[in-house]
Length: 237
Image 1 (cartoon, rainbow, N blue to C red):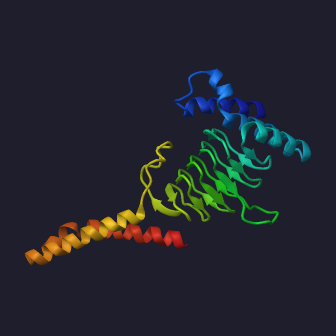
Image 2: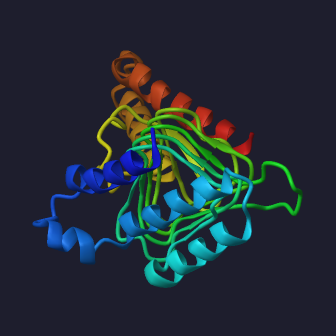
């Protein structure tokens, strides 16, 4: 896609993704995220021609005006929406796929001084909550969600949610809803509920002297236990 079409598409993306937008006037004056992408698209195209100073200058102007720091060397796909935008940082070797939703104060940062790939790769349809930090040469899989204020330092598989500091991973089934990033799994809470239910089940079986009671709930509880163990293994990988 050409430069002009990419810029036009960035403005159209805001209209498709933000129900708060009421007019084109608002779009021009109240959406620093789309203007950050505007400056990025221009600086990135010049950066691809081998220029260095001019793209960085344009990037610096964009940063001053929008409070968003996108290195011109980063690769950003189509349909990306940076909502509220303030404080977003995207490093030089970061790669952002298509239809990615990024909220304010997100950092796609590096953890190395090497000259190679040192920033994250964000695949298509990912939602990154406000304040999240994704650090290093890691990959966030398609349709994944990153919870607000999470610190992600390891790969996140597709269609999974990462939450916490450092972030841990939980499999989810409703990640197709891009804006439902307020509904996040709480693995520790689920384990606590599992233990309470397990104790109650055992107490009932002992009181009634009937082990058949265990069979009715056993499979469900074992499934919860297995999900927790799987999530903890992913967390420690």
